Image (cartoon, rainbow, N blue to C red; front, side, top):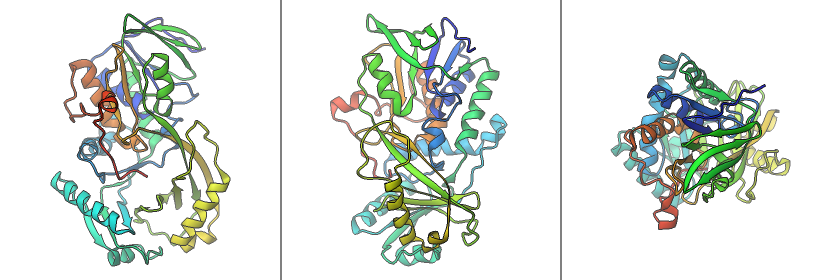
Length: 385
């Protein structure tokens, strides 16, 4: 039986990468009586565990590049700092442009990334074709590539943070479903769960796609849309080289990367309806498969090893939401629009700075607050698939 404490200094809702990282970094800063609540039976099995595991420096806004510049080195140091191997494979991301508009965007992005110290390369269409001999990219006009982009195992990152946090005294519980957030006098007072109530004057909503539901319990409206994204893996394909990059066909929002000895392939369904359905849409999987075969004929002879669906929590400007709300003590770390896993390490650290020091210092994310939506300060991210 899960032993729920009667009170906590802070209750963190959501045991994916955001909640786990925040719990660890708060404990590291000396905060006591930290409670982490996860509704599933295991940590990191919500949106984090169902993501493609990609990590990259290539974004189209400075703030997202800055977040990567802080977060990815934390993943590189993860084993040294936390004793957990996270399988960081630096295959590089190769983004492919097939329209003139994308080429212009790519040129701008590479110049901005280079200015910030990210050594992204701009490739011609011929260079794209030369680097991807197994793929059919007759229509590629340009591409961008960064060698330090790649993949990481999401489960290892979450469990690394959870076990390190527990060693520092954090209470981390699974199977606890938050069913209410008590607010009075404009302040958060407690969290109500299926196992009882916990008094807490600080509540961090890190519930990913379910953050909007948690927000509503506290009377806070969060502009989040949960959207299903799905992917499948193939059996081993000996033709695929070990250094095969994470390829994104931008116009089709179709991507490929190595997974074990086979490939992981996914594609965004532009007609996906908002909701919490995490079952695979078999009809759309066929659309994805056909698009994949068109780009990589080798896929035709592959068999499917596994498939699954997960949820993105998408904000109107595809940027996350950090920090305070109109309810005192009710804080947000959510809205990552599909790139939260890679920014989880730094985001947990940023929330620890905000909670302990009252300000974000590692990266200035003060503009990524909840108020920007009503004040019309949206910041568009182009590089989200």
